[in-house]
Length: 227
Ligand code: PGA
Image (cartoon, rainbow, N blue to C red):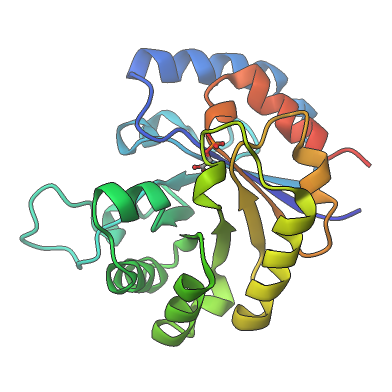
């Protein structure tokens, strides 16, 4: 059976109380997560410590990391500060590229910072140029990294890409980057997740809105893991 990744991204959502409620609801069903589904949840920095190791079979990711090493960069969370809290980190989400003006150079620096401390970077891309730029700036990304391909028009709109076109793009990306797991993201819900994960070049999915509700996120995971 194909191994698949399901990565949830809470974005800028949830108070501590709301996160604790989510964890409680999710934990009650967590034994249902199939072994061949690698589930990753990326909550806010302030939530990271709520996820006790062994609580459920879900890996934790951060949503961002500093492009700088530890030091005098007030407000930044440097990669070593995430050690022991996160196994993965999202880098270069299109929302950050747009609203926080993250360039390909910043994305490359963040990726290098994560790799330096052994945290797996999940670099978000929405076009081929971003992939080529990452590949030439950080060739070692290939060994540890994951790519999350998200067409901007599909994010948060309810207008997911077609599985065939996402697969074609994933194949094109694979030709540039090599054997890196490529995930599709953009309006993934329990009803369409299967159609994406069964595509040859798609190794899993990134889930924004549908990860905010514990029951719905579990439905995405279960559906992704179905034969
Ligand atoms: P969405 O977000 O599932 O709400 O479309 C996807 C993402 O930005 O990762």
